[in-house]
Structures are given as C-alpha cells and as structure tokens.
Length: 295
Image (cartoon, rainbow, N blue to C red; front, side, top):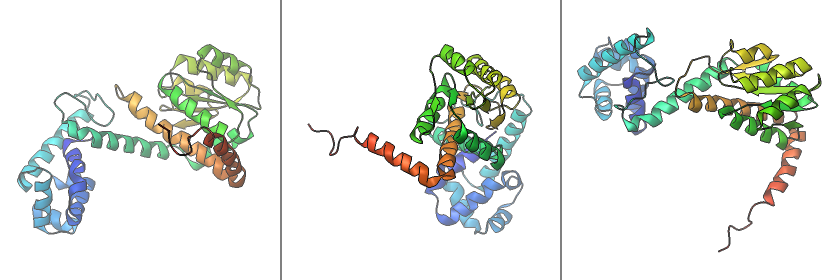
C-alpha cells in the first residue's frame, strides 16, 4: 500500500532541482531505512550535501528533517496495520477518501497504474507471448469475447487485428457470442477477456469454444478464476485484488496487453503487415478532411 510520504514526494518531484531529486530518489528507494537514518548518514548515502536534503524536504512541504522522519515513521506504522487487514483498502494501491488531497490523485493513479503494468509484464513470459502471436496468425477465425468494461478491450483487439488483415469477429450481443463460440473448429482461436474471470457470459462463451475444439486464450487478473479453467494459453495481469477501482485499473493492463499483441503480430512478419497497414491507411485517409473543416 502506498503511503502518504511516498505520494507527497512524487507529487512535488518534478519541481525539484537535480541534486534534490537525487535525495528524493534515495528516500523513495529506501523508505524503511530512511526512517531510522540521521541527516548526515542519509545525505552521504544519497550522495548529496545535508543542506540539499533540507532544501528538498522544505520544497516538498516538510518543516525540517525531524518533521519528515516523524511523519515517515507514522505512515510506515499505518501501512503495516493496513497490510495486516485491520483497515479497509478501498482502491488498488491507495485509499481514496473524502479527506484526501485532490492534488495527490494524479500521482496516485499514475503510481498505481505503473505498478499494475509492471506486475502484468512480470506474469507474461516470452514463451507465452510467442504462443499467443503464433495462434492468432494461424487461426482460420479469431473470436473475441468480453462484456462491460472488458468489451471495450475486445473491440480494441478486434480493430487492431482487422487492420492487420486477420479474420476475426466480436459480437456485442452475449447470445451471439455464445452461438459463435459453439460453431468454432479446431482451426479457430477464441479470446476471452475478463478482469475478474467470473463474468458468466464470457465464461460460458469460452466453455463453448473449448468444447468445440478451438484453441483458447484467456486474459484475466486471477489464475484461479473460473475462466482460467478453459484457457489453453493463460495471460494473467497482476493477481492483486481490487475493489471499487477495478474498472479503472483493469482497463490499463488490458490496453497494455492488446498493444503488445498488436505489435507482436506486426514484428512477426514486418514487411507483410506493413503493406496491410498501408492499405488500411489509404482507406482511412479518405475519411479525413484534407485541409481541415471548411466553414
């Protein structure tokens, strides 16, 4: 869980001088140790002077080094309590409440998204990535399933694969998704996108696709979710539980994965897919005004 001190430092980081950023970087990387360090030792460890550390803390809103250490110790203690489960965590990575500062939200959202993206890459090995690209390229038909927030990503994946000339489809109607899944063959690929892995319509469609013999690819946050049972190729995102914020942060990791897949297909046969993209560009360019909108 991100603590207030870390958020405070990152919020004011861009306005710091270069030497002050060195001190801030050291503190961010050694929050637990910094709480027990005297000023001279922290400055030496960061490779800056003591006045630089003090200027940095003043710029970030602390009254001095003593005030900084006091607040840091208090925040670390609160974080430990939260990790033990005695305080509710309302949002992934940080707690959002009415007492929070509005100015801190952009940095908090960025930090949270950054951590989720890092976790997603960590759980997406190169071998799995290659299998996904190979399966999509060789498929007779690619069926894509997703509902609610995940449907946005299903449409995005559909659009990108169509640009590359791959045969694929996505139905917004859940009944049609189910019917389409049942008509697949072993030459086809079914892609199911579900953050929770428990969306009934998406799970049912993937179950039908699996039963029909299609190769199945699942993008979900949880390896132990119901939809994972029907995955030949499983792409988990972060494995961390979210609550009210899941609609926001699940979308970020799904965007990342869709873009990775898109770029991977292009790289697998660069000349071929660039020709295809150039043909699409000609079509799209005819839909744009040449010199802006005439008034």
